[in-house]
Amino acid sequence: MNDRSLRITCAVGALIFSSVCLCATGEEPEWPIIPKPLSVTRSAGSFLIGDNTDIIAGPNAGKASSYLAQRLRKASGYAIPIREWESDDGLSTRIALRLGSPLTPDRPFDPGREGYRLTVSRTRIDITAAYPAGLFYGVQTLLQLLPPQVYSNNAGALRMDELLLPLVEVTDRPRFGWRGLMIDVSRHFFSKEQLKKTIDAMAVHKLNVLHLHLTDDPGWRIEIEKYPRLTTVGAIGDRTNPEGPERWYFSKEDIREIVEHAARHHIMVVPEIDMPGHSMAAARAYPQFFDGHRTFNPANAETYEFVKDVLVEVMELFPSGYLHFGGDEVRDHRWADIPGIRTFMEENGYTDLKEVEGHFDRFVADFIVEKGYTPIGWDDIVEFEINPNTIVQWWLHLRPEARDHAVRKGHRVIISPTNYLYFDYPNGPGEPGAPWEGNDNGPNSFELIHQWEPVPDTYSQEEESRIMGLQANLWTEFVKTNEYYEYMIFPRLSALAEIAWSPKGAKDLDNFKKRLHVQCQRYEAMGLNYRVFGDWPSDFSYLTH
Ligand code: ACM
Image 1 (cartoon, rainbow, N blue to C red):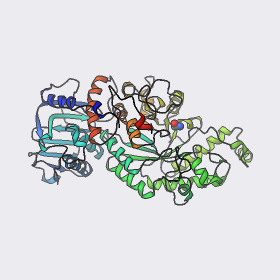
Image 2: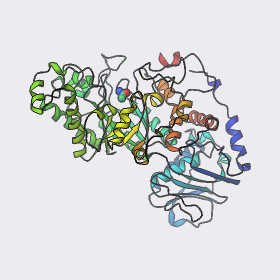
Image 3: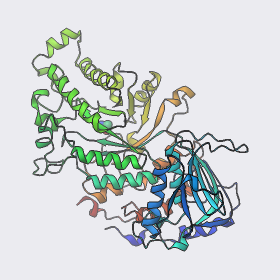
Image 4: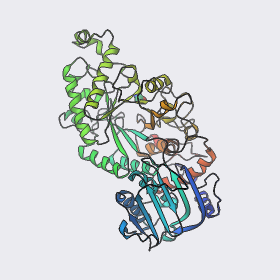
């Protein structure tokens, strides 16, 4: 283990918590909420959640209400009752969650799909939002007004007299609609329990997309009934032990469990089936559809039937409406040697194998659109004329022209460049992480991420509107253990959440760091490993062995 004594003491949090009632309005908020809300106004006084407090839930407020009740019960043991909206007398000590317009004549505010208004007064707490997701995020902010131990599952973590809230009015909504994290479960597999723990932590950060990189060369990690060898053969081993003997994959039941858990936290799960490259695991299982190496055989008509069958089964499991088909790094294919390739090219009027790659990508994107889903591909696909509904995920920061080209062609774009948002890259000098290309801007520290403006200032308003949001990616070539995984994600996830949610503009790093100290206590309460900042241990061997 790393040196826990270096971890943050309660002092910072206690200082911030005790100073709250004295603070005037209008200054930079000291309240340790991450991501920082659009507006926080405080006034003197406090509200104590006591054993006469209940929750009243309007229609469609059930999910947010039960999440709040569960959190309070798990951390403090207090089983706060949830009542129907009709029982609201408008007066007594209540936490009222309802859908409606959070607009008041003196303070116009458009909450969008995910915004909310949270008001803590002396007698009651109100959370109002236009949609259920907003109520859920209002609850997250409410919890961050309580001590960090509110995120603990140990019922003794908080005493009842610690359920004390400052009087505040928060109006809040996200800057971007897509706030994501990708986990590569192919190179090293991570269990559904670890993914659920990740989802819990994402929810605290108001993130809303979990992208699962389910297939790649080292392993195929999702059950497909029509092609059982994908898991009886393709799921054997990982990057460390390619020969197995273990098999690692999610059954359909596992996937449903993960998707349901995510949905309870307003997080959608987006599957990625990477093709036509990065497919060695599937090629081991069904070589007849591949090029003798790691790439699909585009000249075989049966390949396309295989692709369709697999994608249909995948779509059935993921109601998100998005399907990522990869499309990246189709570099070392062996297409020139496969039988039938010349005929295939002649029939289609192609003179270059690059056009064959475009053919394959177009087929897959069109098929996904035909099925009513939205395709996503890594930015390599912008070389081709591809279905305009396809979302392009920009990853190689050395190739900004791919991002710009996609935006100008009218594609929607997710920003996740190697610099800044590859969480497999080191946090700091000399720290563990991937040594790949494109990491020429120093480590991807949380400071670097926090200070970064992800949209080029040369973009027109229309171009900017095509940027759906931001996503960090945890590739796992080197990440083998849950501890290492969490170390790479936290606290960088907090910086990601802040730039994805909080308004564009000046970024006060010192203020963020103060809030981050408290966030680290929340990580502790959630049982997460994280990279300590300030002084940190120089012995990382516990991560990589
Ligand atoms: C990628 O990192 N190959 C998308």
